[in-house]
Image (cartoon, rainbow, N blue to C red):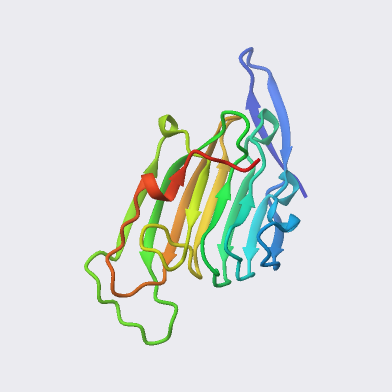
Length: 190
């Protein structure tokens, strides 16, 4: 079912848009290059990533367009990553992430004590930084992406995808060090 969204063009006329935002898709394949990792505008809604993603896996978001304004995804990680993965916008075009992500310590292993001084950080990316990729690694204190990581993506315009949410880090004894310069990069998928 499509949720109608309405905007106005410069002349003030109503533009009717229908963007699917109430769907559900589960990614169960761990293989880095699997086609199920490429999201379409019809996949808008909840994306459950239950696969233990293989190193190098990329979740590929679609290119923002005028017609995709209002498109929304919520990605929820319930699988343990093998190593580094990414969530990317296409390399082509001027699309970019804008927003703020909170990085939290989680300690997925039972009985892991929290023994570090920095347990939570925020990472902000702005329009001027032109970032197209979010780098994830659940056991790396500069990234995150452990079980429970949840990120929301809202297509605001043909070049801005607003991102917010939480990335979890499965490390108990090292201070978190999430930085814009390491968590985000300007290289998207092609």
